[in-house]
Length: 455
Figure 1 (tube, helix red, strand yellow):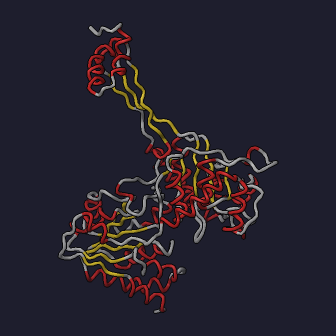
Figure 2 (tube, rainbow, N blue to C red; figure 1 turned 90 degrees about the vertical axis):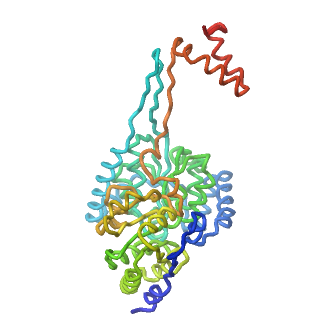
Figure 3 (tube, rainbow, N blue to C red; figure 1 turned 180 degrees about the vertical axis):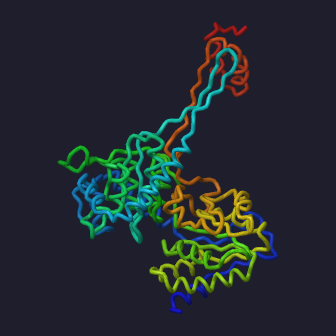
């Protein structure tokens, strides 16, 4: 066993909740989370956002040189670069992306909501209709890995919603001439996305939120038009930027480091549980892998498997750091009933169920970004080809937030259509309620239509 794997085996901490019954607040505080300094990030990100707003492309250029080591004349990826990336894409990767797109489109199409209408007496009608937002900015991270799958996950639901204008951003890569990774570009081309920008980090989110004029002397299509919604995962600085521009634009979620929780009993297969924990840990040193179980024997068997599998994986050091961090743990509980309560309190981005009658247990989960049921539904399936979306709420926000879906890119508009007699029927109630709220002009706006007499 190599030292890194052995250390991961030894360092995954245990949180023993057996024999306790913590209330929700204390249970939430006891569960593992990454130690992230949002205050420091906010100071940095506020400065970046301010620069992009004030300096436009000059700020983007300077930040690309500083953070990415590239010189830019503009951020727009040429159409020929997109076409070339698709032409040169590995056929096996293209086939995988095409299947991912096919399944994602089927699921997204099924999510599109229909309009609803209610008829009241005298021909009164109230309708809720759905309308796509005008324009969206889709962010695909770079950094430690390449994420063409995130292109699929962002673009497909936006297209299904009927969004007319899509712009995609991904960090410029020095080794690819200042363009995003070619596999990212190929995925965009495969989906028909024509507007792609080589920009990353908080500056990309700021550019989408506030817009950036074309560089001096540049063509008009080099400008970045402001968007209505920004979506996509990213690091701490991207998440902080999304938090700071929320309200200027809509966002999908404040996606922080990725996480998996696994609820398992003695029937679980240790090798499967360990493999899924390792697969999540390889994302990021801050990634969280949490096992919730009522079986000490399973927990120990998983630890042994973790040591073996961590030794064999490509990113062993990254896995070790993630598994030994404060965000990862084995949580021991008195039974699956308590395990369900722990999982609903933790509100994981990804939650796997490895228990007897896993489907029934999954049905009792009320807080999770996505739930993976049984031995043969690993999180990695959802990352690529399940048909579901892998852009999911993290850091406990699954308690109130949803994963990326078609409705992220839609807004519900209510339409009220009352005729004279329909208004007369409820007019007295409007007057009475307006007087009760000390807003008499509201009632007067009804009375004036009837000469002051509703009889």
